[in-house]
Every structure is written in C-alpha cells, then in structure tokens.
Length: 194
Image (cartoon, rainbow, N blue to C red; front, side, top):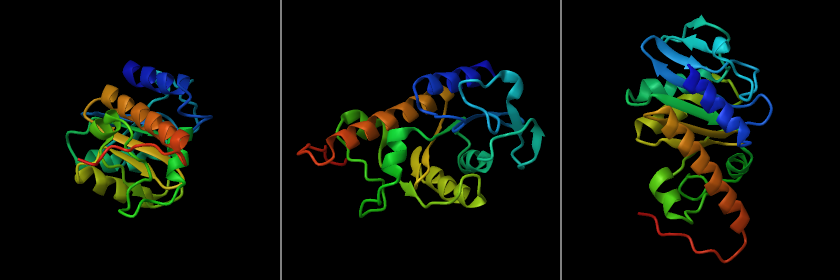
C-alpha cells in the first residue's frame, strides 16, 4: 500500500496529475488496489485506497471511476501488475492531435529511449472519462503487447509488470511528448522505426 501512495505522490510532485486527475492501481491476490475517486494524487493516503475484485465488485472504499480501464489491463495479461493513468499536460496535448496515418499517436521517435521504452504508442478512440467504452480498446492494446497508450483527448495509460516500471514509462511518455511538442515545426531528425 505504501508503494502505491508513494508513487501517486511522486507523480503529483512531478506535475503529472493536475488537480484531482489521474489514478494508479496494483494487482493483488484479491483484485486491484486503486487510488480513490475525486482525490488528488498528492494527498492520497493508504486508508483511502480502494479494493476492486477481478469480478468488478468494489470490496472496499470508493475507487476511481476509471477502474474499468485498469481492470481491462489485468484481464488482458496476467503479467500486468500495475496501471498508471494520468492527465499529464504534454502527453494529453499529443492525445488531442489527430492520429498518424497508421492510427498511432502523433509522437515522433526522437530519442532511443522513446523507441526502446515506449515502442509504438496507439491513440485509442475517445470515450468520456469513466465510461465503459474506455476499457475494451485498452484491454485489446495490452493483449496485443502494448504497454503504453494515449486516450484521445484524455490522457495516458500505462500497464507494466511492476509499479516502478509503470511510473517510469509514464514519465518517459511525458518527456517524449514534451520533446515532440518542443520540436514541432522544426527540422528535427526522427529515428527510424525498428
């Protein structure tokens, strides 16, 4: 529990979850432990964390309304142990751009870390926050081996084998988005896709 609270506060301190936006979860034997609804990640306490079973039944607390998004990742791949969903400014800005011709996010690969860590980043269709329509596209992306995605006009979502890795990927995505926006319109040299 303390790891989840520490990760939430770390991401908030980095400016990656403005206001009461963003949510994190970790897999447990009983389901998923999730940050609460309507609470700033900077103020989350262990006592507020909610528990939602893999059957979608809330066992304890008031989970984020985005819990189906998290559940979809856990159902899609048993190796997923953590999910981070943020409304970080730069990655959300990229999520507001039209997709590239291949349906991926308009996120050029300017650094080797962008290529090695993030891979192809799908831009998933828009659905209102908390709606059931958000979950299936992310579940399908995770089942296809994707670990990082952007939700159109909404934000980022990352699934990983550890909480630390999910946090690292979320930060790498935000750094890549910031770089892409900074270089937009300049004669930058993207790396070739592998």
